[in-house]
Length: 266
Image (cartoon, rainbow, N blue to C red):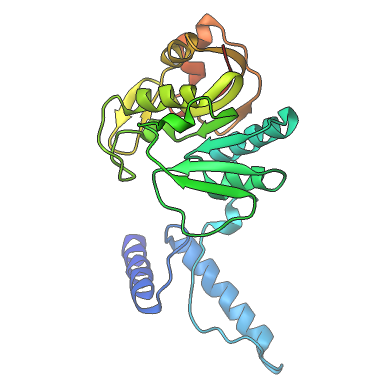
């Protein structure tokens, strides 16, 4: 019987989504549906006999929110907050970003300083303190050689060359991007860099996942590691983690974590 009711509830939610034009927040469940109906009855009861300023015009079930935490603090949250704090502390002359989240990291930095951003996708709005250039960083124009003393690329390089964002498919796209970012940075400059951490693989065409040993190999010839932090698979942030042989071999225990480097160009 419960299985039938769940199907009915699911079908009802699907129909409501089609006819009333909302997107469900959370999976439909029998318990969630009952709680919503109970709360709706209570709300309507409280409105009787009083001037009703707000009418219930549609249903928009949000089944999971009451049982969720106050916010989602995953890898993006911690990397954006951590690197923005480091830039505030280091106070570079000129900071450039490559492909990071505009509604996260870029917004954090733009609250306290100008930031110049490059992305393969267009940006159609003007944002205070943000200068934008549309460009594919798998190729670099000569005028951007040794362009800045501070640069960031957060959770972006793993996408280069996989075609997800309209970029040309290129198996070595991430290496070309990494090398071009290095060319943009002045000697002694700082590169804030993050990518997914775990057993090395491509999940096409979403992203690459990098092993810790491979990341150290990528950075080794051009950079010194000023600091390393990571976010584990549970979303816990580990600041200034020690890079030990055991941790490297095990990718810090991550299957899909987030490696966050602060690198200094040699």
